Length: 470
Ligand SMILES: *Cc1c(COP(=O)(O)O)cnc(C)c1O
Image (cartoon, rainbow, N blue to C red):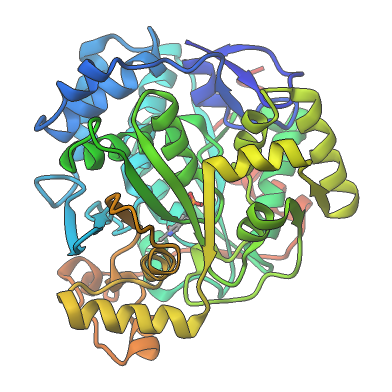
């Protein structure tokens, strides 16, 4: 399978190079050259199969010949053996037409584990095969970093540096990152916002010499392999609800647009998806864009769902590419407008297409608290604030058609116990894994919001030798 950049100026790459590259050299994002389509009979045959088997069937055409089928299968088996639930991602019924897809049974209790556990294994295998090492860098608003560190800890071919906004991630999220003792793990707390961290990571990838000397590899949600791995649970949940013979509607708590774009991928691959609904907190750039066509950056507001507290939604570019008929020039124009003026406008024909793909809704803090309380009262299910944004939006945008709606539960409530308590008054029982975090020693380096300082720190601490990959 070949991959092309959304901006049309980067080389066409195979899966293995896309996996190791992350961001394309023209600043764009890689997408498959064509969408592989599974026959309805092939999808139907996956009903009742274990998660790993469905993953193998869905991912094989996207991976192509980068890994032998048996090697891919054993990486998938190992990745999902780290999950504490037999079903990997169990589906729970909340009401007649509403279901909750629990994506938080992995090692760091958020859905990021689903993709990261597989990505780390694939990267390590590809690098080892090439006799290379890489420096993985990533920015996190909380959950990505922990999931990446957990997935890459102790892996032979990789040093990992994770930037997080100092003081702006929850205590559990911070401890999940900073209490990992392996020497290949490095935490950088930047005195800035998540967007500052993300911009620095983008700038480091844009610095050709640094990128080559450090053999940089990216694991943020722009990495295609992550999106791909997330497409799998759209299949397993739809199959459980009668798919592909019955369409399903999905509500997805969204920030960087990776998780919901995976639903779009599943749909392109043949899964009947009725609608994809973007759920945002008050940082609602995506919802505003879907409703008005105007993508406009405003200030970031801190909320109880920090993984969605962003204004630059990187993966949205992939959907823009699609709704513009895969015209890279149009994407280029929008992105340069964004760079120059902090905004762009989706024209009317493309906006209609965008609205055909996606609905959108927003929840404020009071609505998040009400959703947590109401869901707990009615079902005993304790939502985290991100998942509660989704459940609120599901109610707000409910269909009369009785199409089953699946809300993606993106984190375990125990990851945000203080927020859940203050929003709803409910005490969150802490699992053993979380309690143990409070007894471990933390390791992190606080750095100024300054690119040169961060680059010097990485160069001084990676075990990749400068120029080694040149
Ligand atoms: C990352 C994250 C999100 C947002 O997902 P995107 O793929 O960035 O849209 C939502 N909820 C939680 C808990 C997350 O960690």
